Length: 485
Image 1 (tube, rainbow, N blue to C red):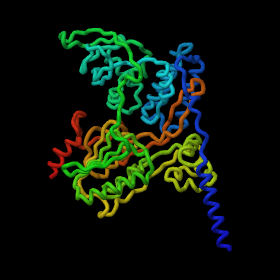
Image 2 (cartoon, one colour; image 1 turned 135 degrees about the vertical axis):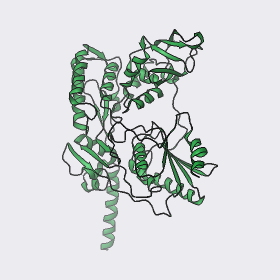
Image 3 (cartoon, rainbow, N blue to C red; image 1 turned 45 degrees about the horizontal axis):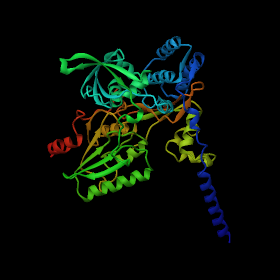
Image 4 (cartoon, rainbow, N blue to C red; image 1 turned 60 degrees about the horizontal axis):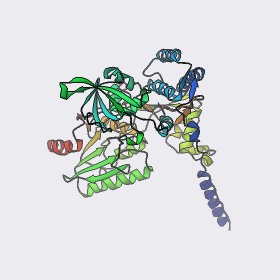
């Protein structure tokens, strides 16, 4: 009888805990963050918002003045404050906030454009109709969304609305959150029209000057009309899941992963197990891991993958500095810890992240040194040649994996340098809303230091750098595998 009561109590406890675990925080009211681009904000309110922005970065960010001195940032704010008119529409003030945050040179800290862009699009405002790439101080048209037959792919734009290309490009770069100049230019090239919108209050028409090759490279002018958001070219992903496995005809395996955050960790681990099992069964000797356009996510997923290819113990990072604040803890809870069980404090000791800051005082800077992970036994891991493909969009946890892959000599990296510095700021969980303009932005709370200890403006550089027009999979199959054989 006593055993039945104990089992009943236990079952009831499980049910109660399960119910508590389903309790979640009240959803954030997104409507409060939407911005009317036609509204105006007064100078005093703008100054107050700029001061609030600076204070939040100093409080939340682990090293806000890594790439600029504090006095330089203060001088920038003072100059912008002096230049402020009596009022600005909220879109132009958002542009100022965006430029201000980009000065911190932190790819994970940025002003949210969605709430502004949504209103802009709904008001049927127009965008620049040409796609273009930036080549040093030149702007080259890559495609057109207009019916004007005079606009051709490869045409060089000399100026837009009276601003020369060589002066225009640096201003666009001020709105790129990337961490190096080369990454800024690649980012702008991927959506030139969008960066023009982020920088200038232009439209609905644009006056461009261009080099006319048919007329001996003479400079001609053209007035072109803007287009709605829906007519712009859109990136279409050919992959409908976060990961994919296939075997090529030359008996090379390919693992393609585009993120580490779309699904459970067990889901990724099941994929790894099944993929490497097939490689074993078919006696595949060459493996390509394709991390092009990898958007990041949970870096533990990368450690799980590395266990199958590493030949010696490894770790994802050398160390990390975590800035623990009440805002960070609140954002962490909202994302990772169900509301109903937060009272049970030992739950924080189970999670790899939360045990880092368990018991810390507000604004503590905690040093975290990741543990070394062991490779799987030889009979379970892949013993053939491994090639990792990266590009300028291999970001965050994708870049962490690439640095770890290179440092611990897990194989050969092919392609272009990654889209993050070797050591970078990240884990931007907390979002903040400026009190007057209602502009939303996010701020990093963690500084990750790479295994190599490299802390400068250096990304993960491939062992073999390829031009973007070269297909890295064909290059590996037709040249490297043959070369290594």
